[in-house]
Image 1 (cartoon, rainbow, N blue to C red):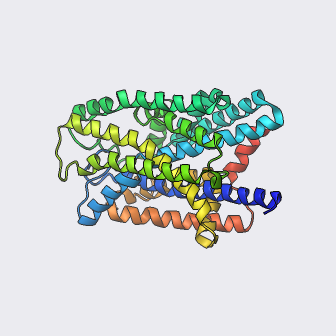
Image 2 (cartoon, rainbow, N blue to C red):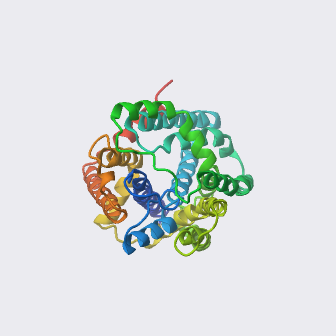
Image 3 (cartoon, rainbow, N blue to C red):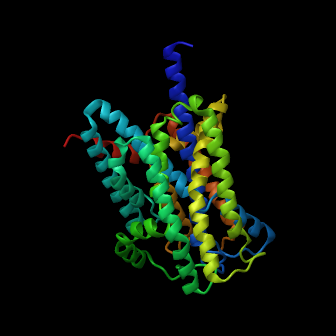
Length: 387
């Protein structure tokens, strides 16, 4: 293989690993956000609603194992990985200081996009959260990987010390395994808009405290520094270790939560501790997923229609994340079609799958016609425009 061929192969593998991860991640995020709108069903355990059939219970358990508090860390890891890619490219072109300024500008615009999504559209925001994380961690992009690993360990230990206790107190005060349902069915767009605008500064602070992403973003920076998804063939052993280790820890941390209210009936404080552990072991789950997609980038030889569609969505992940959030609000919220009043656990999963498949088709057609994601194009314009 010539040097040129090797470079082209690496480029394809990088695009495949990253974009499949991003496109698949969006499906996991859909599944994690839809239950928040099922307001006519009694609360289940934490963010889940109670199931009424064996299939409902199975799907709830499956979501707790593979989706809840696992999609968000994967998003954070890919975000951190993306920061490294931007920093490396801009450092070569314009130097380290300008590269950091560009990243800060991008993070500020992510915060603005997230504020509009949460405040005006009523969607579930994570863009503000990651934008703030990027601003906090931009100085770590020129640190050695040994320091990044130390940052990962310290930030994870901090979460381990406070997060289970915090959630234990939350459920003890709540006196229930499930969190109160916020929707009543009487919402209008006007009152939703007012509440959303007031909540804009609170949302990312709440997320960073109760659902921290800093450790996962740092993990993404570490993965980016070792080029684990850009050159997956050079890291097969590490990818396998991270996949097996990460997903094993994730599964072990999910089991206590899955058992609650079915075969295990702990006191509320203990249940909250179990949820805190579920969140923290989700860091490992996100890492395991990222490594798994790295392995997929190596093993997938034939790029069929499904693979092309998922990668097409991955290339336009910002556009389709916002699109999905808006669609969830439009279809499920009382302010529009109000399907959240009639969907069950099972039908909501089917609805989420249908939404993802339809938008996958749109992404595929956009890629076939070489149409960029509009938000990606605008983000690139505001990030790199001449000051």
